[in-house]
View 1 (spheres, helix red, strand yellow):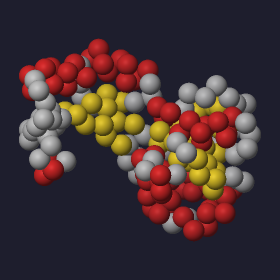
View 2 (cartoon, rainbow, N blue to C red):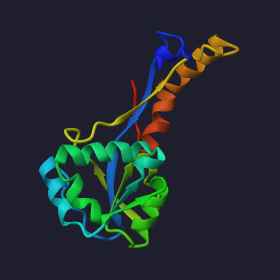
View 3 (cartoon, rainbow, N blue to C red):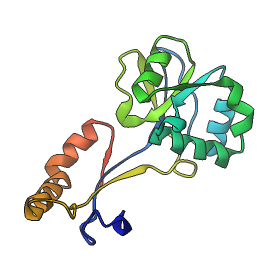
Length: 169
């Protein structure tokens, strides 16, 4: 980002991070996802899985594809996967019972017909960091910096937490 010339070096401000989580249809039994091996077993046993399509640019999909590679089961579970256009669409498929296991960012798990199981273990899925910068094109760099200061403040942290994200500071 810095080498692009579009942001001011030294203004990097961590805002929040968000983990990829697992959801099931409301009322369904929640699988064990406490360890990488438990997640591996759960995915192999699942009848169907959905998550946002990485080919469409979905960051949660890109992250989960990396998780599948780490677990060594990317090829094995391909027949079970039904890609969705975004996290909300993935959660809707789970809520309707069309898919057994749904994955996306925890912040996208607001569908009333699902139960959130929890985040994937950090050993296999690093949360995605959200970072703000002051743009080199900002008309008022001081105001841009003030906005970043607010977005990384304790007041903003409460909002991030309420939306399934972890504050950056």
